[in-house]
Length: 200
Image 1: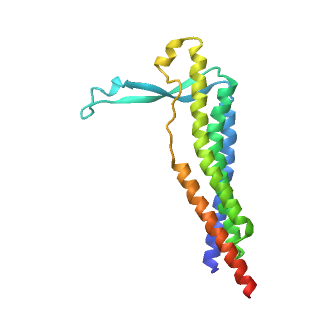
Image 2: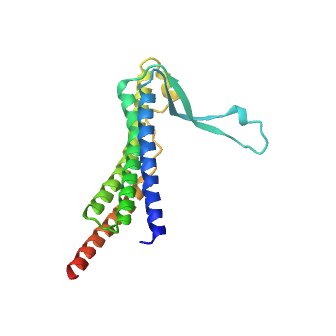
Image 3: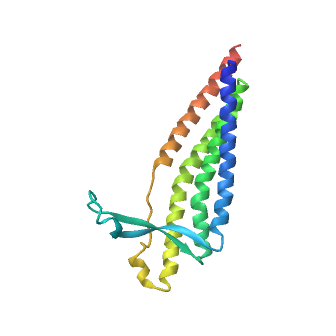
């Protein structure tokens, strides 16, 4: 590698390490927030008109579908589900950053096709896909638990909050497939490097 390429690889590896550290910090902070004395949760609500916007020119209508609700008490199971909602995507970010750091170090050492590289990228692909999808599912389950908890006191809560709602985003699954293909490419590159070294 040229000196400029080495500098670039080192910079990318260092950036990946910093992002992973920031994700760990965010994960810890999220846990403290979820298990704090007071917690604010963004809850889905049944579509309702927003009266403050009805008189503005050029706006035909407006709805709100979410509300930030502050709770004094919540069931422990709901708190754990909300923790998983934020923690699983954070773990996926940490996994991808670990792959970027390892690849950057390998490029600096002129050994990008290590035996462990394809396995590491494959694990990161699983983390991204599972972390993104299961994180959303845990969030929906946690909010459903909150609604059931509130409905025990006032059944009219179901008129405000849906019993279960999830805004499914399939992007993590697509990123997971992309990383899986990269893992397969690295596996082929590792075999090719091994065969080339055998010829030499």
